[in-house]
Structure formats: structure tokens, C-alpha cells
Length: 214
Ligand SMILES: [Zn+2]
Picture (cartoon, rainbow, N blue to C red):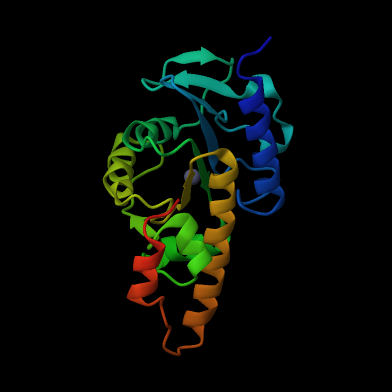
């Protein structure tokens, strides 16, 4: 009996949905990665490197410890595994990480612009801002360091400059839902900016009432 079967299957289900909805760039690519924390253990379950997501089977999904040592699975884990492990170490409130190359959030990765508080139901889920993590090459310790510096704001979504998006959640369902909320917000904000008209953000008293994301 595989003790990691449930999170492995959940990751595949999430990846297939993200793939079909364009969050990874294309059906045949693997532009992103998804992981889940194993509760009460310094372990994470994560997608392998360079495998088309539509073809994955549970035993392809890797299990590693926070020092990136393999625990289960024969494939090479995602090159961004260090980023996922760093997030779990710094944010005990995070149980899953969904890194995507989702289209509208990627626009803000190119114009290097954070997304402010625009919709109350989004702010309740992901926090008051979607900040930009400054650029560093994929899979490098430099990128891990920049991510760890930015996630201290306690929010659940981030833009990776010239790269893509990072969606966190207490569970995989929440991180997945946050990816959708970020894309909806980025899409609306992009189109609003394109009108050239002033954009209203949520009033300060609303942000106070909402408080930190839950
Ligand atoms: Zn990426």
C-alpha cells in the first residue's frame, strides 16, 4: 500500500485540470509544478521534472524531504522543488503550492506590476496584494531566496517576474482555487487598465474588516 497514494492522485487531478485550462502553457508541456505537504513530517509530494502532465501516473509523482533527498518515486523531481520546500519551511500555514504559467497573471510578470485589492471575495482568499517576486533564473537558489523574502507578507498569490505565478493554500483545493481567483483578477485588471480610465481599489475600511486571508 502506497502511503502517498492520495496526495499523488490529488496532484494528478489538479495538474490535468490546470493543463486543460491553459495554466501550464499547453497540453503537451509541463510549464509549472504542483506540490502538497505531508502533515507533521518534513516531506513534500511534487510533480516530476519535464513530464507532460496529461501522461502522469501516481508512481511518477515524487516524494522528497525538505533537504530535497528522495523518499519515493523514481523520476527526477521538479527543478523548482527547492522553492516549494522553502515555502513550506517559512509558511506553516501553507499545505500546497501551485506554480503556473497562467496567461493573465503572466502579463503582470512582464510589466512587473503588483495587483492591488480589487474584489472582496478575492482579497478574503488570497490577501490584500499580489506582489511581484523579482526575477531570478528558474530552479536557482537565487530564485528560492527571492521567493522566501516575498512570501513573508502572509498572502497566498504572487507574480514571478518574467516567469509566471505562485499560488499557495492551506490545502491543494485552496491553492488550486487561488490560482483561479488570481487569473480572474488579473484578467479583469488587465482589461480595466486597457480602458485607460481610473481604477478603483477596495476602500481601506473594507480591507480592515476583511483582515488577513483565511
Ligand atoms: Zn515555471
